[in-house]
Length: 237
Length: 237
Image 1: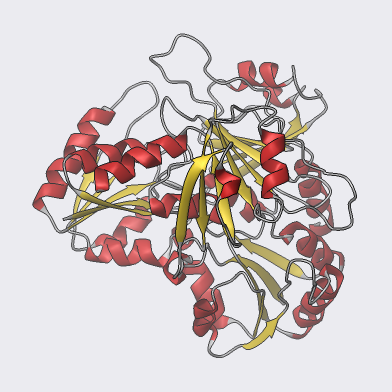
Image 2 (image 1 turned 30 degrees about the vertical axis):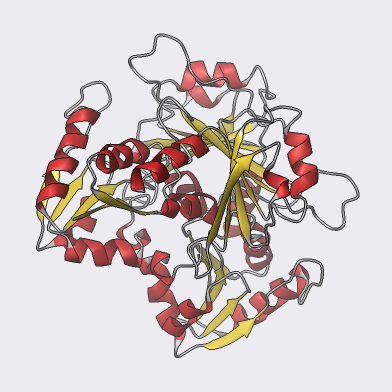
């Protein structure tokens, strides 16, 4: 009777951990959402699969409904895997699911994954830290809680690199906010469909990045490390 | 003739990616440092192993020497794995190694790993983000560049969670700096030897955390998510 909250990584099925694969093979039930690359589910050949994915705006299941499914399955089975894109604790609502399960006396174990925030820029050769360029980075969600009327996030992060997950829907308004604190010439890189087929990379500056046509899912990286990435691209070509 | 810069994860050999294990099995040479758990090297049974680990203060190899080893091995072999603790681009100097290799025309591929910054708190049940509590986190190094005379890092990060890697040597002075911007009652959690045998967890506040006896390697997490962790621990007991 253990529910494992498991990170599935940024999308590439080879960027899943050994432990995640082992648990998928052992699982009685796998509860997954739309962020996880479905290829990964092939490892769970013996398990019942339950889809609880959400779409921005139109919720397929509420978080309370998902928590209840986790509780119900956790009470019935030995090994339940709750598979989440990226890492379960990076905007994955893993903390809420863990609390809901523990309140019902169900054992929970966390299996971290490669977060998209670091792994997606990593695979394209964009280092989120770089000696003499960036000794800190901030990861933030660009997706507002739909029940909130005010912008929760204040954008005066003083880290050298800012990484925005789910940052496309509100990109224009958020970039305006960030320009209150950072130069409009600060370089920006946006990676669509990171580590997956159809990956697309766009670079620019805070001033001009929103003129580009960008579609979610995409990751936004802001700061001088984008210039390091540009150097790397020039060396490759 | 490819050099793979590969993240080995936070320590637990099961938190390595499928791709990392596959590359270790194929590798002609594996170049590793002291942060990687040596258990992981068992996967590289057919490879020559080269240790280039550094100790704080007394450098075993300089970064230039390491870069030269990577270039030499990259020119001689088909598959060279440069294995790094955590993720190669989170204070791993992966960007510098990548640039040095590309300048010599050697192909480089990045294989991201689970960073200790997120994976270590994750495995103990400490979420770095949590709905209504933390919508942003900053990761920063506490280890100063020994060639710099001034403190490079300004600690006025406005993220909800601050995570310090290599943060023990300068903990006292850095906590004093952080208290200029955050309340002394802000909760703090320190995890020694995360995900490995001998793991030890200490909690407190900015005001009193330095009264504890803490030994590196350890990770420092600061912010209200530490209270979520305390709730989780209470539910578990």
